[in-house]
Image 1: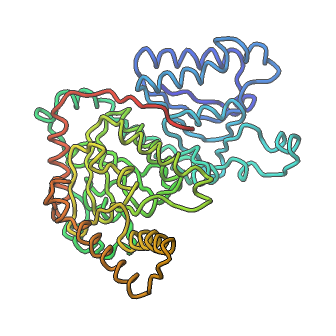
Image 2: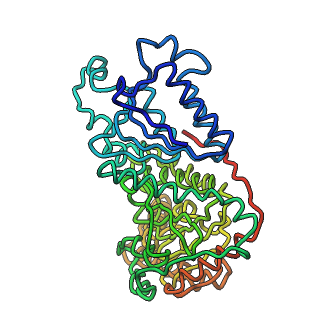
Image 3: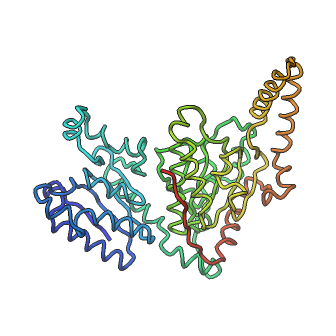
Length: 438
């Protein structure tokens, strides 16, 4: 169901009859379970007619109510911001499951520059106040940054391609009688052996791994410009739709919120999740704590914990502390979990643990009036590092069945394909979430 504003008529604002037409379109979509595609370019309610547009049950506010209810029922809500979204109009893309914004044209704000100046004295351009760069990179209100309108429409088609509307039937019936066509990756899987980092401090782009395991090396990235240390997006593996979550560094507030959002979308559409773990943990420090890093991380952990779609975790590098939790470690019931030979699993790095434990030991000795000489401290740290290195080794983990085995990186695509095939031969389960702390 397409709903498009016409900006050439009163700036696309909503007259009483406009609201009625919009609500009727939503009613049809709800009855027929049709995805809603909103092509947004609206100044919100037509103010001279506010008494007939704003206050009643079947007025302007009902549009957003319908969006929320349809989304909860699994009816996709997609917005393409092609022009201005002011005041109430801003809530259509803000409440959509996924939204696209066009550079230079698309804007989203509750109050435009004139009202902002009148209310606060601030002078700001429309683009700086609520343009595509602001909402795709900083606020996270929008998910996809389009260079122009044609690019925006192409991104919209990609979103529709990844809706997986037949998901429940596929999951219910399994893969036995379904023949998927697929393309091999464009890049050699054997190259994954050289991509795998032996030095966990060495950063690499997780997209180079994704390109070697997904069909045709095609990856539709979600919220690419926001929370960039977590890469999320849709792809196919042996023809089966998957949602991929991979680490490109430590998790910040934005990264965790992005991860939680993406997991919610995948559970809504019954899309299996693949976690590619290479994570040292969450960002620490006073700024992160004041920004609510614990709360943001908890949202992602909540989403991972409650997701009832198939979950497959591949540890391709480090797996440390709370990062292990947010990226679906063993305690979070992945259907399968495998390690690359270079993987490391610990509550924290050996050197960090040695430093923390040494500080505690030093404080204890000081209380007892004992002076701890440098040589003794170094020996103490060496023992801790040695223990952490030994216990963090993938062979130590797999020998205790903390995972499902160590795999050759070149076999990652095949292993994930087998895991998905096995996971889908089961009845679907509805995902229900607890309370997300806001």
